[in-house]
Amino acid sequence: MGSATIGEVLAALAEVLYGSQFGLGALLSGLVQGLGSEFGFLVTKNRYESWLSLTANSIGITLFSFVYEYIKLGYYAFSLPFVLSLLVVRFISVFFFCTILVRAIVKLYHRFAAGGKA
Image (cartoon, rainbow, N blue to C red; front, side):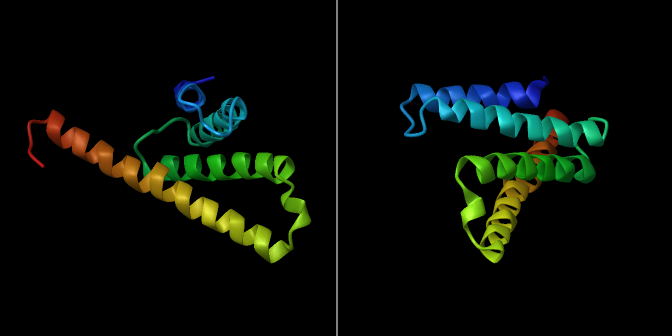
């Protein structure tokens, strides 16, 4: 278990503590998302800042969380086109937040660490 899983579980714990409607189930979702993230880093040998690594991370999160919710929420009851659209929308969302934004934040961090300005 790496830092991605710990971070996801801690975020889920914070969600539970502030009274999320999902309750303790959020912890399991956090664990699944964290493991998906770890899988992406495992595949790319943990090269954190590369586009390939962050994209693999997004794919892992998308697949792990989608399979979990497919079973938990009963996506199998829906038509195949609808289920595929759920998968595509999830990937786009995860890719934006876990690849594009993370990459931009890391670039800003390096710029500031080097003494640059925004």
